[in-house]
Length: 203
Length: 203
DNA sequence: TATTTCAGCGTACAAGTGTAAGCTTAATGT
DNA sequence: ACATTAAGCTTACACTTGTACGCTGAAATA
Image 1 (spheres, rainbow over the protein chains, first blue to last red):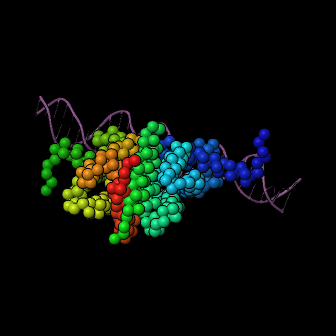
Image 2: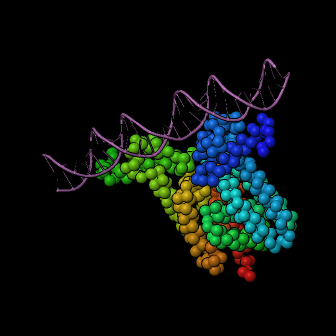
Image 3: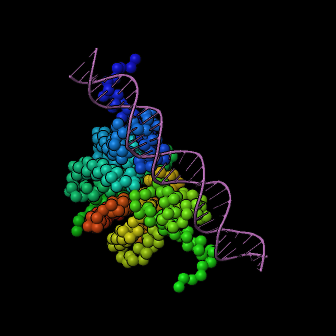
């Protein structure tokens, strides 16, 4: 038996339906900018004009999706760090966690990747902000773990995130067995960065 | 005085007009997939239906643009290597060359970046191929210069290219003074990778 | 109970899209 | 010199798009 729904509950529910429908559409070969209001409405099971009761624009919805995707990624990082015990497998654990996330939330990761270089300047900077959060949190962790300067930690963190995200992009289009190869590859590359920073002496 | 044009010459000329018009359109906030045939035709100064005399599709044109962009990038690499004399400034020269290229051909670099994570699987793999070329040529250079195994050179090269491309993406949206900061940053990060590979001992 | 609010709907329209069909006209082939 | 070819044009059609307008009915409020 379904519970009696208050008006507010109902509204939040359809709002969530729209968001889910949008993510579902993006799963295919659609970007936020090429996604049409009518298509989203169709998928969410509402009339096109009803969309406006919840969002001002498709842009408005898009910003919501980016925020939500960024949030999921940050939560992921925390869960990954909780799994790390010895320093030696910090890289392995992080990469495995992210790769797992990408596979289970392809569309979510895709939004970030796609809009990062997409056609909307607003989306681009929104994604950029989310990535900066991501980098910053990793940087703090690295600084604490490796006892290096903040400057070095920032540089290392950013380099690592760029490498990992690029690998993620490859993984999105790759077969499962290739994904394992990609994961191994990126682990080595992250190791290079870590070793390099340790060796680095600022002149 | 304009030379008398043969039919074939004229055709190649308008074909090039279309290509230039497309690149010009992409300079704005347009991706290949969101670019309309009519818009290109308008910009090229031809009737919409005349487009078909030169390309089967917008897809067909898109592949041509990706190929052309990739070619320019490979030519750039060669010119950069010609400028390098001592090993010490190989990174600096390469980064400076690329940053210069990005600024002078924003739209060209944008096509590669955008379609790399774009909505067309065909474009994505086409760009991926171009990037692989780019990586391979750098890898050969690194292997020869640093006397390391091909496996290590491939890994190093790919990591470096990913870092540089990410920096390029940032530079596209950045002010000139920020671009200098970005260039410095990426040089350090590439140094880390190089140092790390040198330190790396496969277990 | 009577009134107000508002999520969702249907209709309607102007604007833009890809592309099919057929014409014009000038360069090419014979 | 005549016939052929083909680049480029105009017109036309069926679609999709965003969104303005006004209605309905049920939940919220008084």
